[in-house]
Length: 297
Image 1 (tube, rainbow, N blue to C red):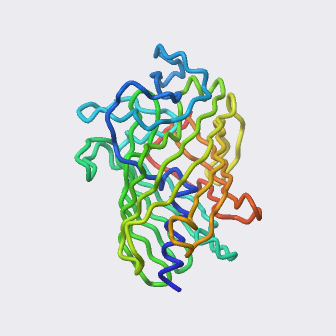
Image 2 (image 1 turned 30 degrees about the vertical axis):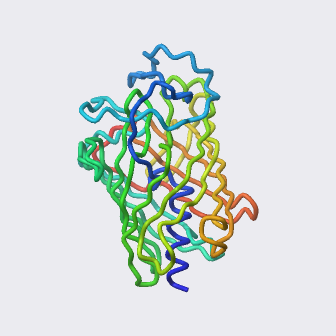
C-alpha cells in the first residue's frame, strides 16, 4: 500500500506542478511550432522575429544552448539568481487519497549548474514537506530564447517513512512560461508527451505515462494578495490529463486536473491552485509566505 501511495504521489507531483515537471534537453531543429520562437528582454518587449499567433503546439524541439546561459533569463521566474529562497504554505493531496495535509515548500536558487545530462543550465532545489510525506528535488531549467522550460530533475520521495529515489523523463520538453510579450498579450499553447518513470517501486519498470494538456496565459496582470504581500501578477491556467491506467497496467486510474498559477516579475510563482477536474477536490494549493534574494517589480 505504501509503495502504491508513493508512486501516486510521484505521478500527481509531475502532472500538476511546473516546478516538479520533467524533460530532457534536445536539439533545436528549427521546427518548433510553439510560441517559444521569440526572444524577450526583461522589459517585456519581444525582440524576436517570430510570427507565431500564440496558439501553437509545443513540439519539444526547442532546447537550451549547452554552452550559453541567458544572463537576464525570464523575469517571471528569476531562476538565474543564485541563493534566493521562496517559502510556501502548502495544502496537498498529491496521492489523490481524499485527505489533505498541510506543510511547507522551500525553493532555493542554485544558479548555473551542470544537469545529469551534462547540459549547463540553471538549477533550483525544492523541498516539499507535509505530514508524513516529503519530496526533495533538484530541478534543471532553461529560459533560452525568452521561454522558460524545465529540462530534467531527480527527486527523493518519502511517504509514511518510505523513501525512494526517482528519475522521470518525458519524450518532449514542456514549456511553462512563454515570452513576456506573449504573457502581456495573452496566449495558449499545448503539450503532449510520454512520461518514462524509472525507480525501484516494486512493479515492472520503466513504465510510460501519456501526459497532455493546455496552458493559457491571460492577457496582462492582476493584483493578488498572499502571505508574502500584494503583487501584480501574470495568471496562467493549465488543464491536463494523465493516462495512468494504461501506463501502470491498471494499478492507478486516469486523472484530469486544472491548475492556476500566478507569477510576479522579479519574484516568480506566488500562488498555485490545482484541483481534480472531475471532483473539484484539492490536489495542491500553495501561497508564498516569504522570500529572500529577489526583488519583485
